[in-house]
Image (spheres, rainbow, N blue to C red):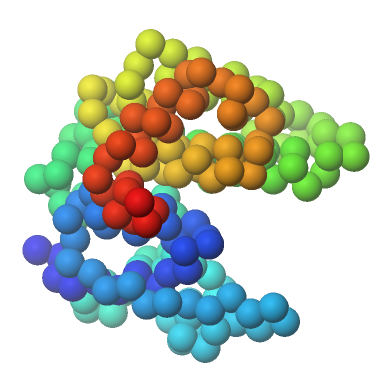
Length: 203
């Protein structure tokens, strides 16, 4: 067993995604609250384990530090294989799982941030950015979910935790097309019914 874990956490951050994953896994863990400061300085608690000063940061029982949301989700999925949160290594489904697990941070999040924070600017050239364009990203997500309950196979995996959390947050901030998409909203609603989601998101 992985032992007792520590998750450095702030509820107004991406750490809620890691928290949700720990709940899905039934992990034994402690939340370490991290303060966000108005002056931009970092909470010494997080700097002591992660020089980037970012959450989520997961500390394993032996002191190993795991950062970056997809890395944390992948580690947790593999550490609790009985929960079936990842397809078998070497299987074709594992390839699809990796695709969507890393799509969120490399395509969805940067595309959403560009669209939301550069609304009056010309979109960055498709050939220069890894996510192509925001509309391409949303089209791709809708295509992947059309006629399916989950991204890979017939049950929730870590890829759904990451994608679902990203789309949920994007909808809260009124990301274009997210609230209007029946496919995306149906997907979020299915995931939001999960007890682990409700525990991590505070109901």
